[in-house]
Length: 227
Image (cartoon, rainbow, N blue to C red; front, side):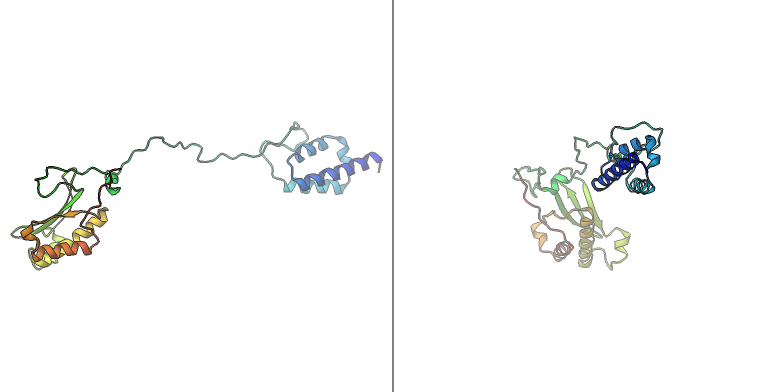
């Protein structure tokens, strides 16, 4: 074996061991230059085996070619994968699509009305109880719009079929239970309830009021936050 071959062999081993320890990507550039040299064919088998192991364990990029006819790159660039979130843009304008958001935060405006008006109009939701000659009806009124958002009545067949009478105390209590369940399902937990003073002590209204409270509805609204 000639002295030039021994010199190339020792330099190659030092270079390969150094790149193996440091893990630099410039190994591709060094190996391509060595493969283009005609002296690479004179390197012993041990040196070629070590170079093959380094090539196997080193990650390859799409823009790096190891063929002898490829152009020599100055430095191998690292692989960059496109993120799937690059096409998304955050909208700087936020639109609140929940009309009851300010009411939930106790920031919505309440209608004050005249001081002589009874009952007062300062509410977001009010519970009403009406009893006719044949049926009992309860509903929740939305203050700012004046619309009925939730209701329950003994005229509904799913409720009427389980009642002995549609106008007794038991009917009032069951209407309160059904209405409380529907209010919680709709996300309404606070409301006001003002009954006529000479009817407030009636047993049917008291049973209705207690059933609504036991169902999880609070018959008072939080104080409005002005600041």
